[in-house]
Amino acid sequence: MSSEKMDRRKKYTRMVLKESLMKILKVKPISSITVKEICEVADINRSTYYSHFQDQYDLLKQIEDEFIEDMNITLHSYDNNKDEEALQMIEQILLYVSKNRDMCETLFSDHGDISFKNRIMTVAYNHSVKNWVSESNIHKDVSKYGSLFAISGCISVIESWLSNGMDKPPKEMANIIFNLTKNGIDSFSE
Image (tube, rainbow, N blue to C red):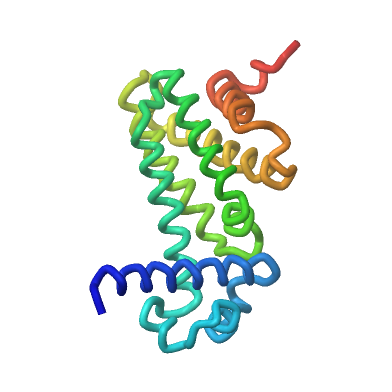
């Protein structure tokens, strides 16, 4: 069998297993999910599963790692010290969330791994603190708290946006998040 065909089969198997786990995660927490259950939904035998992943947590971590890798690529593609680029960066993240709505809702739900949100916060925190401190006169200790405040707020806003059925377009939400982060709640005063 050719290497290319094996790679396609391997990709397909991984995709089906990921989709199956996400489907199950919608209704029950990761701690209650078994490999057997994932295999039944995926219609793949357990030995095939174990040739790709150690357990259900390893599969979930792979899904989360891909999300975080995509987030890192987006964060590093823009200079968030330039307002226009920071706004574009936020919009790109929201477009990604919108395109992957089902996965994001599931990963951010109570059924996912609680450490996922912390990993996202760490990635965003490391990116923003590094940029904010290097480009501004903000004291390092204050910038840490400010960025944590902004990042946790942004994540909460995105979660709320998802739970409200993404009631505003990504561009409008990006403007809201950008203005809240840059200028605070007063930026919406009448």
